[in-house]
Image (cartoon, rainbow, N blue to C red; front, side, top):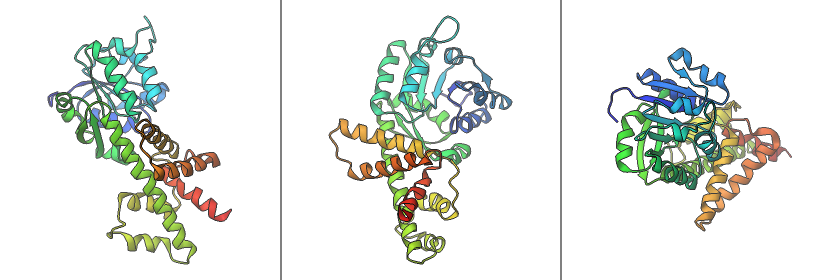
Length: 299
């Protein structure tokens, strides 16, 4: 793919999809957008996007199709299930040579299945999940982990670079495997920061000042910087949801099980996030795990 404007179909205009689609529009690309809740897609019409009635209609003229959907089952349903007039699926409506890029978080095995099933249609496939949250999506600074054929990754780099920093990590499914690693590190580190801040508060130290003191040392991290700030401010408004963090950790455990890989730390943190969701915290930011650990101290 050259630096010339592309005709892109963007399926999934939610919390992350909207700002990502908006950046592509601002870069001069032509976008046709679709979302199950149509109002979310229509929010991009003022930025120049065309809103399609069905996934098949959205992808019919596209050079590149990007999906940013909730999970692998939803991707499968949206792409492979016939819908709309003529009952055509998005997979059947894609033109041969089209580049399909799934940027949501799904299981590696699901990404491999999508690549395998789209190949006979002449569609090139990349799995390219992201990290960086809504702030990264808005700023175009997302970490993008890309799995697929090297030539297809090279073709996609100019487009993906509008959204962040793409890195080719291996064949089909490898992007999703890297995202699981990312989510394991993020989820576990959020737990460590939350527990540490609660400990110092219990001992009489000021958690705001302790966080400040830790910055720049070996405990420094993006999690301490961003999520730690949310914890000390008590700001758990959803940017990246606790429910999605839980889903990703469960996906990591599922994939680990397929490999006969023991992941006890991830198992423990998954249990904590599950407890948080069970106690009504699923719609908080993932830093809301702090609230579950705080609840335990007060019980």
